[in-house]
Image 1 (cartoon, rainbow, N blue to C red):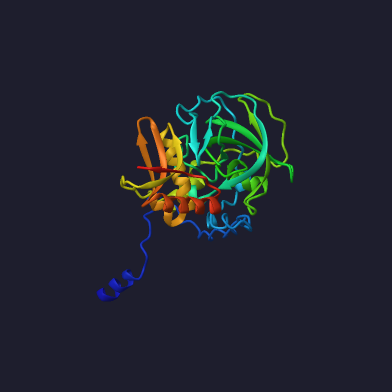
Image 2 (cartoon, helix red, strand yellow):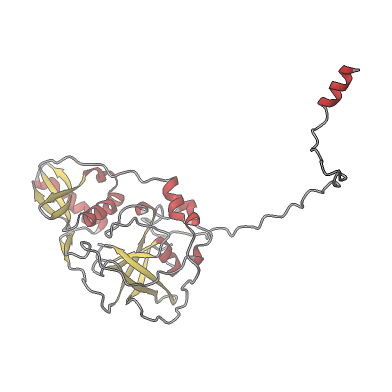
Length: 315
């Protein structure tokens, strides 16, 4: 009998002690299973530009991309170094050093995953899901409204980077800003750029988004940066020979930003990129090549493929 009693105890689940003398509660039916709300799928995007096909966010497209708000203009001190004169591909640029009215029309392009997380000319990491832009001469930081005359859409972005440096291009937008303007698939389009000064009241523009800012835990840049850390650019030892000089800056951040940008476009040649410092000048150079003829041949290929016109220097 003792054996049977022990066996019975081993097959029964322990019961809570009721010290209030109340009757045990009736069995509670299981809670109904709620059907999970279907998430909005990310937008399907077709790329027609060859260079841009592998530069989008891939599977990291946020489903709430339409809710990402435009940049909000506010008074900020201008960057101490990013607005100094500089030279890229043999062309001199003199950025504006004060906030002032600006209006221009030209080709707008965009840059995405290949630069995501890399340092911009302002020193801030580039966020392809933010509402930012790169411009050759507008003050850093400053704000502009960019409009697409083809469809009437308009966005407000914050300028925090330098570029584009291809002939005929006016501005480089973040991936999200270009998506909102409707030209992600083609890679570039004609746009109108107009400065927006702090405190300036803007009329509502078609296609602009207004929504509360994203929470930190929902920030796509944090998720992508954690999932796909950017490898550091290879360091090039100081060498002698003939080099292609691609840019010269008075600010190291500008030079590093150009080097990171070119590293994504030069493929195998990226290992030959280096930033050489001399005094207060930082030069972005590609090389070395054994003689001037080899350097000229390489420079001709860059002109044909990327529209670059580098200078040949000997060190």
